[in-house]
Image (tube, rainbow, N blue to C red):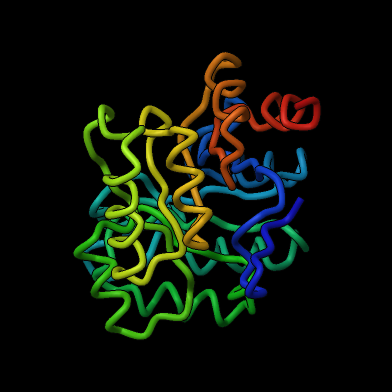
Length: 229
């Protein structure tokens, strides 16, 4: 299913969505092979790592800074996806935000605003995005002690931080996932997204929590398990 929020934002779901990791089903990370595989398997959401070359050009590659000629040009990727997909959503995992305007310009150029959202956004980056007036929704990337994942008092404070940062939810490692987190965030109208579930055991465990999204390198298997759940 596609992401569809109560407030008409394209980012929450009535049931869990499955995001194809940037190197899903054995493909090379952030490659044309990966993008073509997402189209082949009709992925609901594709995760794309975004950073910048030293001259500010946005590219897709899993790195804080790319050298000249490294990475696929982000603008070309957006053009390809706009021409070859209709309902697929794009999780743009930001490795940097130094020239975020070039990213949003490319998204707008190909009319993909309603199909994109940002992850990988740290609290200090989130505040900068919020202040800039960027309209693309974003999840907060947050780490904490796994021992706190069942503490409702801690999770309520965490949810308040997400709201203060202007984010629509949290995107974190599956080791931080708990039923309490999903419940607390849902009560506040926030979303929960967990990465990266690559074994059937982890997939089944996360599905029992009913989060809004799970990211995996094996979306075909996870989607099958979700439909059975």
